[in-house]
Length: 182
Image 1 (cartoon, one colour):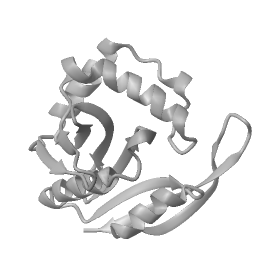
Image 2 (cartoon, rainbow, N blue to C red):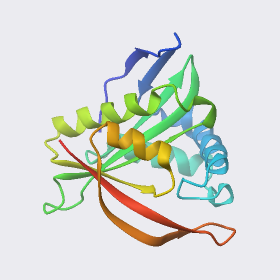
Image 3 (cartoon, rainbow, N blue to C red):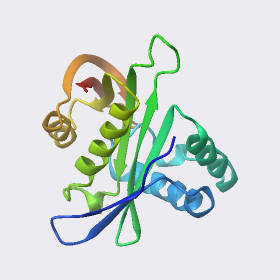
């Protein structure tokens, strides 16, 4: 799915560039990003050692996303440095084509700068253009920082699933499904 690249100024004066990924340029940096970001927080869906794909596999994955009219990935670059990414996947059948699933991750050093808001608003804009009625996401119930962001942007809890994720130390996480009506 196409996304028109955009520049934005952050409150701290730095500039962020929101863009779709270039498979040749971003495959290895995205692999490195995922390994690091998954190690920085227990709130992402994988552990770092589960990121095992090769640069060639990541290039193919990114090409597929860029060509798929039902998927979008947006990268955030702050002053030329990869800061995070977000994604939108539109339901795969006629019955679910009114819903989009959202994912987002940032390097920890970029938390609290407003990047999450910018990226989620960009996804919501694309979702509206595509005629979606809802955006949905899953978040760990104890990820209060993210929940506050999502609520600020109009997401509301629609259900809880206890023990939906189990961390390496055996800790069970309850996941919330949150939805935003567009």
